[in-house]
Image (cartoon, rainbow, N blue to C red; front, side, top):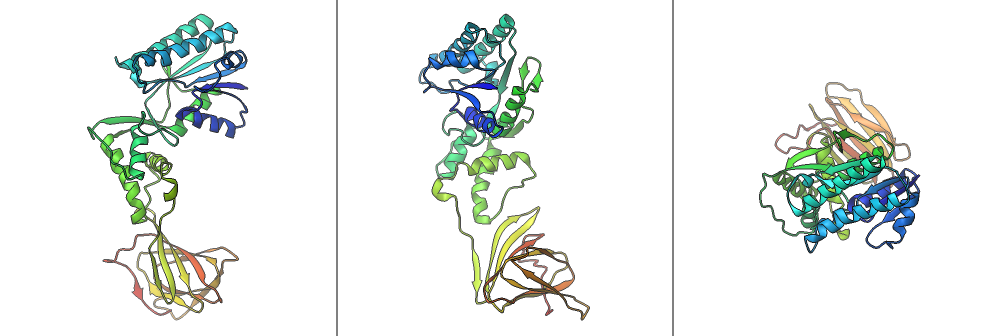
Length: 369
């Protein structure tokens, strides 16, 4: 299948082409501002489907809106008619098409032109009025507030919010791409004459800003957002894509003593926390028990033994563990427990606890195994 993508270097085009290739679509005609315009004839003659994503968002002169959003659409459709190619045509429009501003008027004109083309030729057309699209590879300081906020906040630059109470309707780039590939396969989602991305989020501008600032703070707090919330998950993924290349990593606070070290890695209020424990050879750590706190231990390097004893019993239970055979050991409540390094090298244990450590209520009671 031969696919023409106009605006191939743009935000949506770049993401779409990447996923098309992932799905083994190999005959992709990429058309953008740098493409030799004479190639448009070859592409329109041969293509089986058109993703018309090219457009003008921030021109130097407002007259360029009509030239870019209507004029090139007209050229594209006339070229398809020239070669009697009635393949389906998808166009990227905007919810601004409902507004009486230069950008909206130009988008509406492009829509009308496509519907007329369909009536004249019988070609299938798919018009998407996208709301605000966000995700990786979107240009900051252009036409996406989220891209600008993510870029500026990750780079320590100020942001400007005129009205934090403005509600925004958002669609995520991966959801957009999934819908466009569904359209390619003939299973687009429609609402009357228009096609739609089925997953839309509504949130205020102020809430978006607060979330993005919380993502930056999460490094210091060793937390991650609630990934069961799909909007937060997608916003967080977007935020990370704007990190400066020299700031991909960040330090953790290592609590070091003569026994080794203990370092908190990830903390989540709803899923507990993960830590890394390093024990020196011959060292035993623990000898305590919990009422409600429970843990999971996973030795990933070295070897040792985890011992348990129910607090009112004399029977000691032993589990020998090693990084050569990864296994998780549950630490049940009501059992005092310890872990001893039996090897000649450091033993590294990944530890999960079902709750965050609260120094005011540690739920940890010393008792030798």
